[in-house]
Image (cartoon, rainbow, N blue to C red; front, side, top):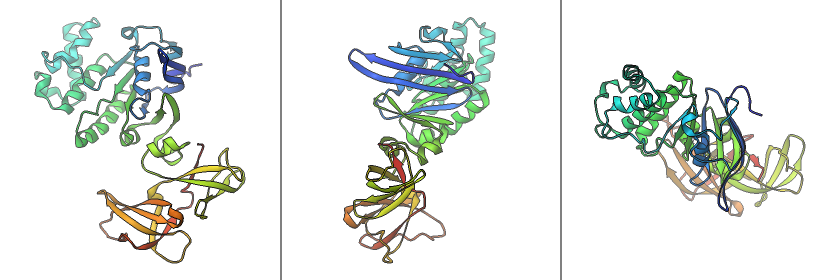
Length: 360
């Protein structure tokens, strides 16, 4: 049953196109006033789910509720939701003001009322001074904000955003992330955002639903998903990680000792499949390890290469037995961190609790 505090409840939703199943029994809830993100690679079903919420795609099986009311049989224009599309879909022959007014007038607002509301929305997105311009006279980022103003003008209960930043360059995309989050807080409208960009999802979202192959893989807050991925897909898709095969040597209710193929051992939090003799996968984030000069420690290897990525240096270390680890060292103005040259023997220190056991 839908929750009283939820903007959207998706219950066992399935979408089929002939013999192809695009969505497989999706169940999730989106809370009122939150910035919720559907994250996953191309073809995972995230846009299909968004279009089902909007009413542009029919639900094959299951139910969708909006603030407790079943909506899967309502046509799109009767749903109190609006959508911002990837291509903005602005009318090129209209001014910016007229673009924002259009939907309001179609809903029965007088021209004066629509103009007042359009002015408020253009102020909100900081484009009031461009109200008389045509879309072609604006930058991509400005057009995106016009599309946002037009979608917000009718005061929808839920705003759906289908990869609206993907056409922008990196700097503008980063600026718009902050702006979108600020607008969401200011309006109090529930934002449901679709993206394949992990950084975008982590920096903007109150909660994230990670999807793959039409299935919901994990749902939670950004930090929880990054620090505690449930499976190999989530660990590998969200940020960067070292994925290691291991076997459980000992386990109790909370801690498991795992042995890698080269004989090294690691302790990690135990999960359901943590029984002695079980083969498991471990995830270790590159920033949860540090390097030091070789000191005879068992966790010793040789630097293969250093990759400079601006904010940090990623060092590939080959351990005994051929296992490779990527270690991230933050750049520092103080120059405290040591970057070891390729061919140097080093010791790898893994932070306590850094290894995460995965369900599959």
